[in-house]
Length: 299
Image 1 (tube, rainbow, N blue to C red):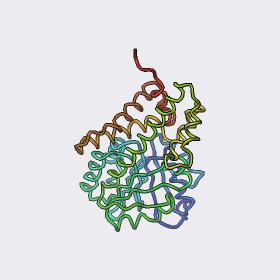
Image 2: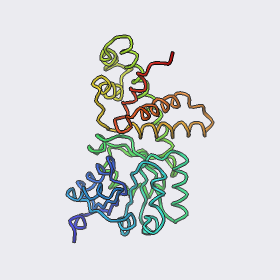
Image 3: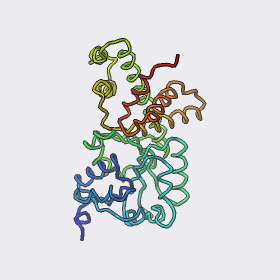
Image 4: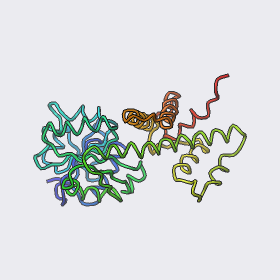
């Protein structure tokens, strides 16, 4: 019997063990849960073996017999790629198991996944995350949980292990909708900070004066301070990759426009981040949107 199987509590399978999934899986094992892992590449899951996470060769193998199956991958298309088929996890999901969907997939993507769960008779909790690398590592995520109340209750041992708060939002899919609301604010804050720092530099000013000026006031926020200091130091260790920020800003823009709004501000943020990716900064932190903000306008 493996060390993972001697633990108590629900068996949790993490499908996707990148930056966020790996941190969540580690915290789940620390809390005493029995944790399995699968990822593409598989090496991401295998590296967690020393942390008490048991790697499995396929999504279906990791899912079979699990109580909670957590998807933490970049988008809905990635989930759909391993949800069905020979090694798909939905067919391996037990009748009492719960699919805890934690990826940022947008409104249309969330609706597809909720429908996919229904088509397979699966219970889904749509629960995107608020937080990036450090909150994930420190078990300080916020869970935007939506779905059946009883299903959210059953996911509580996992949520207690990986987060500091669960916000219950009603029917499945509402979690992803609220994630669009919060991400719109986050991405526009990062973009506005990038443009403020770029303008200060263009004026020949030290951007630290801006950060010190707003510090501790009603104008201040953590994103302005952390991302602004990245811009000043020209060092962008990824808490959230710019490529993911661009994707998320695009999803918010699409959701806004599909809802009948113009989404002007978040659309501008999405364009700024898209340009930063185009300039080659996709694997740096999303604060690297600064490189697009500092570009000079064409004559």
